[in-house]
Image 1 (tube, rainbow, N blue to C red):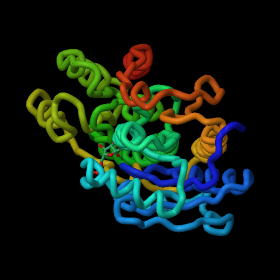
Image 2: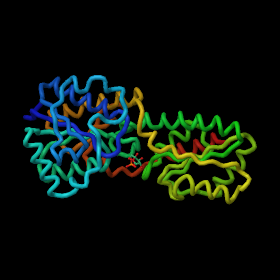
Image 3: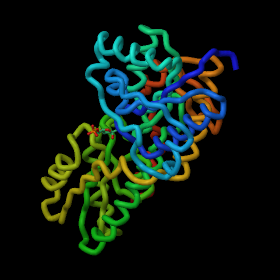
Image 4: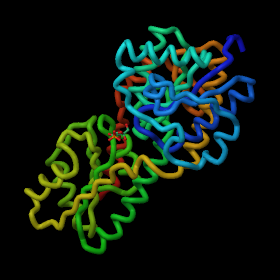
Length: 326
Ligand code: F6P
């Protein structure tokens, strides 16, 4: 371990995700393992700007690995977007002698971190914490597995009532720019159609499929990512209603339940592994990179590459929906 780092701080930023607490716990306990002092920062960059910075110890992270949300709280900070805000944040870190940071969040978090390093030359390592799974440099982000399992649980229940009433349901899931929640959960619930922002909708094909599958199925479920080009579940439902006014159709928006809940085993292990790796990376002198897991191995990706994730939708997965929906 080659760096002179003595005092590190951890914070969560952007939308929360199940498993963030497991990540905080791993960072704090790893820091203590290497005899570092460790601080928490409340409400992400906002807390950095406003000096909401406090020491943490092994006890501060006891009994949190199973909890959803983030004990450090999170925010989207307007002040940190300004040069003056970032200067104040840096001065506050200096007051506590903090010489390394672990940032848990998504693309907004890493964009801010890259700017901060550029202006103030402080080492920052990131952990991918977002339910959207929309970062390059990791096969999965912390929170994604739990979120898709929440979706599955909800849609299985919707399917029960849909089947009893012979209904068509349009279910909206999260994902402003990314269809990855919709795609995997869609396959898992046996959805008849999946609409995602990355792929242009073929309406004719969709209507044909709805009509065709009616022969074999009492219920049909269409999963729509909130950022799809049609404009969400209500817009999709309207189009279907125009074409098939006879359908008994309902819309269900799953919303923020997807962001909560106890993290899955996958997310707890992922967050624990990446938390350890992040602290060790700081001690090895790394900076400006996100720790991720690629094919089961720890990998580091510069922030600018991690956030330039062009959603590489595996079209095979979409064709699985097609093949299996009949
Ligand atoms: O980025 C995570 C996410 O949950 C997106 O899927 C969603 O579009 C967005 O955050 C919602 O953000 P907010 O909680 O600010 O409404």
